[in-house]
Length: 380
Image 1: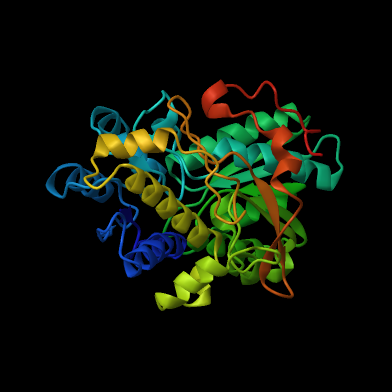
Image 2 (image 1 turned 60 degrees about the vertical axis):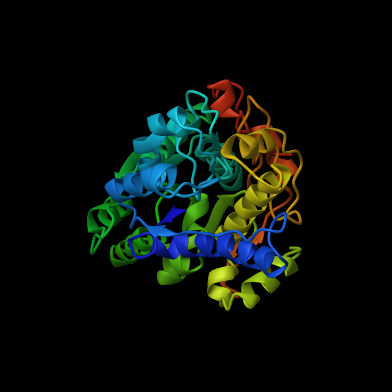
């Protein structure tokens, strides 16, 4: 796998990487798969496109692998053509980039809730929460492919909901402040902020919002910002903080996360690493890989692993996400998103309802290529 180990998004990628490794550590501790141990190789790409591309090529050729996971959306865009041309099963990442899915890629298997799915639930839920007929909304994003997709989809959905997109702001990795954005929010006074980013960029943004006196702002975020350190950076800024995700942290209220927690503790991980939805995601990706490798037999090949992935049906991780299903012509394995509300008293995120409550909001955009069926009154 290729992951950000020491770069600007490492705080988000560490739990995901740890989830993959913890699952396979547990499998190897029981003798491996079909009697063979699994070797998990992790290369650091620091969220840099050239490093991600180099790492991916290495796994395709120099270090032949049965399956691959990793890369951010911009890195995925850079290897999209290559991934269609080889036979290495690319089993998800912490994010799914549109270029990997459109046009259909027989080698890529999405195991992140897509950005259109997240945005479809986020806009419907946040508009419903405010109860405004014509909400004024601002968006923010990091300068990556998924950020561009997020901003574009949210803009279209806001307009369909009868609202106005006041402005979109690009938050830069490594920026010391986001004062231009903070001042703009203070001046324009949007009804809500719908944000994309990484923990590091979001923390800087929160400080700038506080600096310019922004208070009691409702914020809805993409899945990667389901991190309590973000709203806790400037508590007075936030009225309500929701993340929209398809994965639940193992220790969340009502979650059946004991197998994940046991594997994490056996691997020597602290709760700040494993009690995150990204850990659940990495663990689930490893489960999917292991299931496919097991089904591929004693001498697995890439083609055999892919055949097994194409018929994976209703793989359950303890209801910490919707069950995983693939078919030969549909590689969106996770179909479901719900809100998670930040509780400042506990510092935890609490799921709001069930995944099925929001199923009517999803257009399956990467298959239908259209948002036409979406409407703001889609929540049960």
